[in-house]
Image (cartoon, one colour):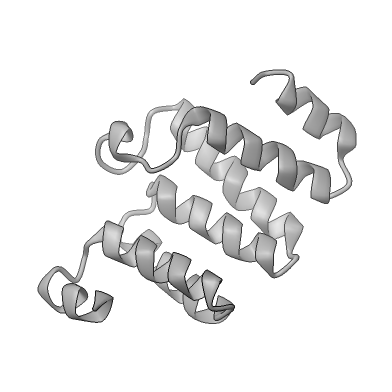
Length: 120
């Protein structure tokens, strides 16, 4: 169904996000990375795509790379540089911060995770 939608709207970020998330649920991590990466090539400041990449790398237990993507998403969010309307982002500032806390903690930086948590 999503692929049919992509034929009609090949640059739809919503469809690309849903494909990437569904691949995570199916444990098809390399396919998930491909969908999110494709969207990021279209729109490098796509917040949902960055969060999607952070999520898939978190699931693959690649916490350092996951942290890199969530930090980039937070920077883009903070600087209001997101692709399109920031209100269209699927994630709130609080959700981004919580993802940052969890990912920072998984890298072993407990003090850093605590600092971020205190900003929420």
